[in-house]
Structure formats: C-alpha cells, structure tokens
Image 1 (cartoon, helix red, strand yellow):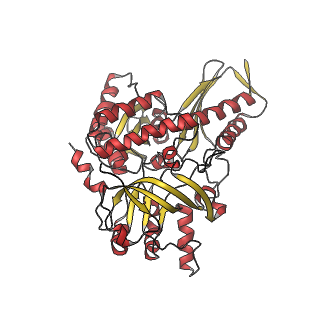
Image 2: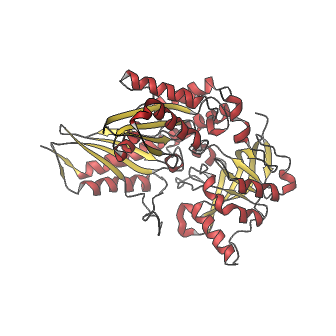
Image 3: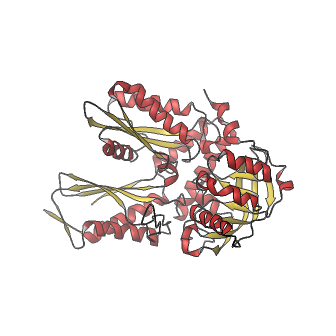
Length: 281
Length: 184
C-alpha cells in the first residue's frame, strides 16, 4: 500500500487545470498549421490564423486560451494499492479546482442549481469526476476543462443493431452538421459506441482526451474515424462556420461491448480549444 | 478578404447600411457586454415598464462572459459566446434602438427579420480567440447587475476590435453564403 497525501492530489489537480487552460497541445497547434496550409477559403484561412495567434498569446502570457474555461471534468485512474492520507479525495480534487480557477484567473462558470436558482458557485466547483479503479499504486489524472459552446452541441442516440455502420455515420455526421458554426469549428469529434446510454456518453468524452495524431488501434474503427472526418470536412462549414475545408480536425472513436438488442452512440464535440492535461502521481 | 472597415460606436442605421456580409471591420469606442442572465433581466425590466441600466440607442452588445483579468491587464480573455441563446430576448432590444450584436453562431429567423426592420448588423468574432481579442479591450467597467459576476453588463472601451459582418442590415447571411462554396 502506497500512501498519497491529499495535499499532493490538490496541487496536481490545480496545476493541470491551469496548464490545460493556458496551453494548446503540440498536436493541436500542428493540426492548426496543417489546416491553414490546406485551407482554400480566404475567410477560413484568416480564422485559422487568428486561432494560431491566439494560442501563441495565451501560452506566452499564461492567460486562458478561451474565456470559457469550462466545467472542470476530471478522469481519474486510481491504483487499488493507494491509500489517500489527510483530507478526503473529493475535497482535495475540488480544492485543486477552486485554487486553479481563483489563482489562475480562470472564469467561474458553474451554477449551483441547473433549473431554478442558477446561482454561480463562485469557484467553479464542483468538478465532474470520473473514477476508475486500476491496478498499481499510482493515480493518473486527466483534466478536461469543457466549454459549453461545444458541450451544448453534443448528442446521444440509441440505434438499433440493424442500423449498423451507416446508422453510426449518419448520426455522427448529422450531429456535427446540425451544430454548424455554434461549437467553434474546427472541432474535434468524440464518439462513444456501445455499453449503455451513460457509458456511451462517457466514452465519447473520454475519446476527447486522445492525442490528435493517434488513430484507433483497431483498423476498422480507424477507417471509420477517417471516413467520418472526410464526410464532415465535405460539408463546407469551415473554420468559424464561415466556409472552408476545415470543419473538424479529428474524429476519435472509443467503443465498449454492448447488449444484443442495442447500439448506443454518443457524440461529444470539442471546440478548437481542444484542451486536456495529464499527470501521474 | 478585403481591407477592414473602421467603425466607431455609437452607430446609426445609415452608417451600418454600407456594411455587407463578409466585410471585415475594426470596431472602436464603447461596446456593452451581456449574455444569458443579463438579457433575461433586461427584458424583465422592459416588461415591468422600468428604465434600463444602459441606453441601448445606437449601441452594440457583445455576447461575452469575460475571464478575470490578470494583474496589469485591462481585460481578461474575452471571446464571443453562442448568440442563439440570446435570440428569445433580442427583438425587444432591437426595438429599443440596439444597432449591433457581436457573437458567434446562427440567429433565428425572427431576429434576422427584426434586424432588417430596425437596420441592425450581426458581427462575428472568432469563437475561442479570447486571448487575442482581449488585446483590443483597453478599459473595462461594470455598469449593471454586478451580482451576476462574469454575466454582469460591462462597458468595454475597445480599439480596433476585429470582427466580420455575418448578417448585414439587409439580412444577407455569411453562414448561408460561404459554406456552400466549399461543399463537395
């Protein structure tokens, strides 16, 4: 049994949310530059240029890439041989989020009651935490601050098995086309297939933590990713939705076994601020 | 893209007539921020027949909830939010003299009709380009609904704020004009 202090969890979470909000990953910046070279639309090119400049300014000055610094979503892989000492785990995570958003000059966008009061909690807590118990004596954190311009454009559908690959393609492409300019294209499309309704949604979100230059290890899913990406980029929506060839930068699919009677599919869209940061302690 | 057209606020419908969908503009002067909660309150005040905290005549509203400013900075990162959420509140504001809106994303048919009727323009800023855009904001004051935090109405003093005309005062819509050119 390895002991990990709650204080270290707090510091790690704090660091990750600041980092994720300030720095666009190298994989992302590469995709922007590649897209700008290929873009045929002059307006689209200019939008990509502003996006590239924006990422440079944010990184250099340590300020947020986007004013919507998101709801704090955290994937945690907790080693079963870890004992957490000091404060309780959830408290430590929320304390890390609180400090990141306070001290990092990040926007607090969380309201306490979704329907009636809608009063800002003032510190961007609570975080949305997805916990998985794994082997070993370490904890891995992936911070994914999620803005709601794109989150609001996400959707889920319970397809029938007969709808198969075509059903999946139609639903994913349709969701992105319907979203149009709203989720700040060029987008990254996370797709979750299988499991149950909530599992598919979770897979779609988890798909948004995969680096942009990494395709699915199963050749059939990798092929599907690239077909869907091509279909989306044939739409003409383009950067900022103002026309062009670059509507999506990548499509990332994750799957899970499912029931004989079902084919759940979830689509979680990320804007071009494809933010995530990870650390293992 | 052609050279940017400079405009200064407040604006009149006459001045806005020259702007066409697709034009790049650089906006200078005062612009006001308002998003979901502030819009709801503004429309509520109008329903109750009360005065608004801001005279909207000839003004431009920027749909934004800025991030806090770092010490030494006039403004925090401030990119546009999705405009469609403000659609249910926009027509009464246009009736009150609002002449421009800055945001991102599509608008409803009702809003576009009212824009044509009252000679208003919908500008787009690049969604997510918050750090870049904040450079054009020189000074920030909170003018109303301070309790709403980032959603309060702020007065931004801007210089050369970069935007593009998405829907002009004749209803020409860039989101409808441009994408079909690149569809395969």
